[in-house]
Image: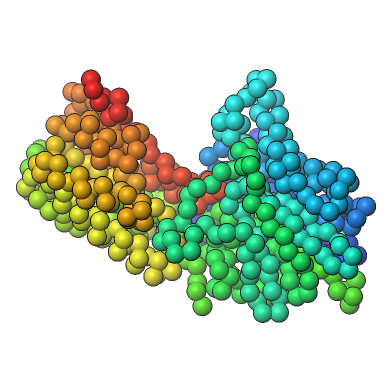
Length: 283
Length: 227
């Protein structure tokens, strides 16, 4: 019986390539990146793989950081694979776009490219030349937040988009507040949370986008709802914990440890990616 | 400090207690007990649900007020009595559900759209007087906390009535002709437990959705309409 603490059970045998936890961390001259992704208690108990994923890369010509975070839809049979592939495809496509035009991202193109990757997987998996969108979704449906932090002269600019309900925030490290970059699950004044989510492979005509300057003392956070739900408005204990832990970039393994906190009812996979501007003193 | 405690699914089991259910009182009691045990066996799921059990006939009586089944120690008991008044059901839910949602939000939870599982073995004895409160209850503009309603009919219940009560045609079920009603009641509670467990898994995920399993011994009522 799952309690506060129990030993994680293995995922099903063919999910061996999706480890329980993963983390990443490095810095460029101007930016520091960390991310961690941990399997939630529900998946650890019910022998399912982590269905969250994150990937990040540096665009070497410009020094921009390109990133993607995805949350596989639990009802999709291979959503753990869908999440990773959506991240890979998004990062690849944004790197390609930055090669051609470092000024602005084409979010619809990135989303369509990621959706096509899921279709290719479904073609291979089903042995069908043209799988229907519903068949692709049944196998690989996933949310996606992707984007880049670019250098624009002396300034740093974050540009990102999302498909589905994963979130992004700017953390004010001086005041401890979280400024959401996308809308929440409950519209203001609405008594119920919304269940209206349209994940990949569905590509909206215009994905929800956000742009913002990344200056001191702000840190860009991108997270799945496994992080966003317990964070809420950011004014509770979870918000306080992460504001404290992210005051300076923590070791990647430590970020994974902190992200693996236990809180009743919050048993989903959790992924958090953070990007800090580097100050002179930290370079 | 506003602490976020989680996202809950309020679930209401509304069971017909009218006189015609008297032969099946044991199955009703066993079904409710198995539902409670089934949720206690899944504490991670039960943590995200709040269950209420209501009995209806002439009026609605609370057999279990919105409860956390991990800690609830009593098993609600249904009491056979009176007629089958649907108006009483929908008028009660029209008051009860917004109040419960407000209370849960006040406790620091966010709330999914509530779900009602209605089990009835007969046609409403109040004619069409239930249509108005039902329409108000299920209109998301007039009642922002409007629930999803799953309707299961047994015995004399008609397919069209179940389709009219349910909020989507695929949420209406009718016991197959000739089915043992006691067994159908057991299957209703079994399927209800499975639906709540599956919904508990699916609701706090990237694509939250209500999962409704068709009970064995039941058909989709929409398939029976017009036969």
